[in-house]
Each structure stands twice: as structure tokens, then as C-alpha cells.
Length: 220
Image 1 (cartoon, helix red, strand yellow):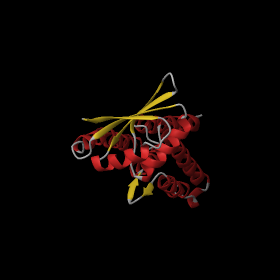
Image 2 (cartoon, helix red, strand yellow; image 1 turned 180 degrees about the vertical axis):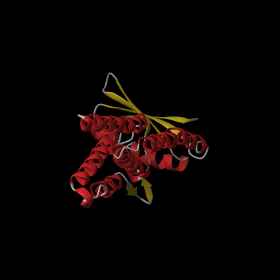
Image 3 (cartoon, one colour; image 1 turned 135 degrees about the vertical axis):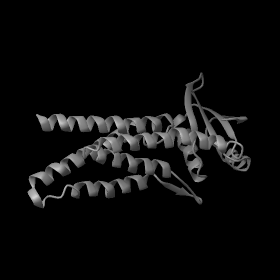
Image 4 (cartoon, one colour; image 1 turned 90 degrees about the vertical axis):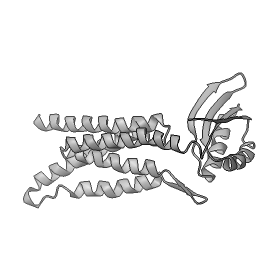
């Protein structure tokens, strides 16, 4: 019963801490969102718990770090898969680093080190939420924000083509939203790019199925 309660506490704590980080990623509309980070953190905690239990059953010959060490290697591949390189630009580094850090938080919780895990979670959220917005404001003058409106009746095709073009230029959409219209769906998103890059993008985006409209740059 004691093992059950201890394991439950650790797994719930890992799910909460991973969920806090994932919530920020979800609100920022990043690929690894709430559920992904919760699962990574909870899974890492479970493997750490298992690692400790196996070591205890093995007596003096048991090594509590063997299973946990494999988590570090495995999560490294998962984080690397979130990083994309295209035309000299690299993006997804923050997502990859977040995945790696969330796994480390899960290992800390699984090992019973709640305070370091809590502090790490606070630092991650501070880095992503607060510093991310400070960075955007500092770069606002160098990279204006262009507001795009795309109205289409073929959302899957338009979205696939749109994503392909933006990835080719190493650009990410911000503040994506959808609204139903009489002729289909209107997609709204913002691009933080220089005027030169926006001009090149606009020429290619005009080929996306639907009616495209661009608003003047706005302040963040």
C-alpha cells in the first residue's frame, strides 16, 4: 500500500509539472503540447520508479541508474526529431530542448527529488512564457508582424500547401485561428518576418487554394 501511494504521488506530480510546461506550449500552438509533455514527464517518472525498484530487488548488484540512463538516450532522439533544417534555417530547437528538459523533470520526480523538479519547471515556464515574449518585443522592429487571412473551401489542401511553403523558408505561424464562413473556412495567422522575406512568401502563398488577404504590419 505504501508503494502504491508513493508511486501515485510521483506520477501525479510528474503529470502536473509536465502539464504546466505543456500548457504553455499548447497556448503557443507548438507541436509538442499539453498531452505530449504530460506523457513524456509521466513516462520518465515511471521508468525512474521502475529503475529504483529493480535495483532494490537486485540487492547490492542493482544499479538504479541503468534504466533511467536509457531515457536520456531515447528522449534525445525524440527531441532531435522535432528539429527541422531547411534552406539554411533551423527551427524546432526550443521544442526539442523542452522535450529533453521535461523528461529530466520526470526522472527527478520519479527519484523523489521534488524540489529540483519544481524549480526546473518554474525556470522552464519562465524561459518559455516570459522571456519568449520579451524576445518577440525586442525583435518587433526588425521583424514586423504581418497578419494573413486565408479563406478557402479546401482546408486540408490549403493547410498542407501553406505549411510546406513556410517550412521551406524556415518560418513559423503565430496566433493561428479558424472561423467558419459562408463559402468555407477562414484561417488567420501572423508571420514575423522582414519585408523582403514577406514579399517572397506572398508570391508563393498566392498559389495556395483560396482567397488570400494580408494586413499591414502591426506591433506585438
